[in-house]
Image (tube, rainbow, N blue to C red; front, side):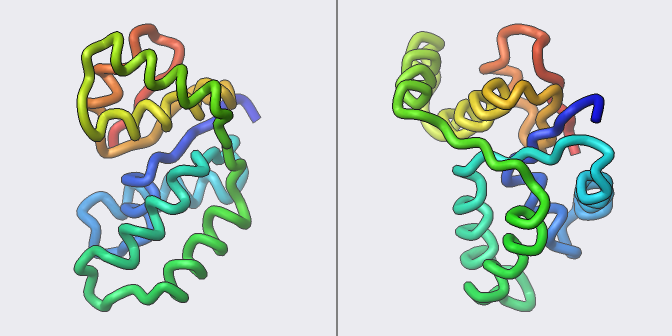
Length: 146
């Protein structure tokens, strides 16, 4: 494999939900990941974030907890490489976002970025390129917008 792609939760949700506006492109990325065209990477944090969204968003039909777990097991647990952070890495994220004077939910994108760096991922797949552009201060990781 020549490269790796870390899928953030927005890319995973789009891939899993057919009615999502970005489903076709996200599903194609997921298909390619499952075909092992590249390393498929997911932050451990994103697993629970995906579960939370799947079970609480107003999807029609509603997604039960058991169905959400099955979706995650069949698409993430089965195929993705999961990246976990250490205590020190979480404090490094805190240092980085506070030194950049960043507030609020961007900290969760900083977790994704730290996981991508830890795995040496070459790309992050997301629907949220704006926040990543605020925290990636070099060209070491490409951010791919759905």
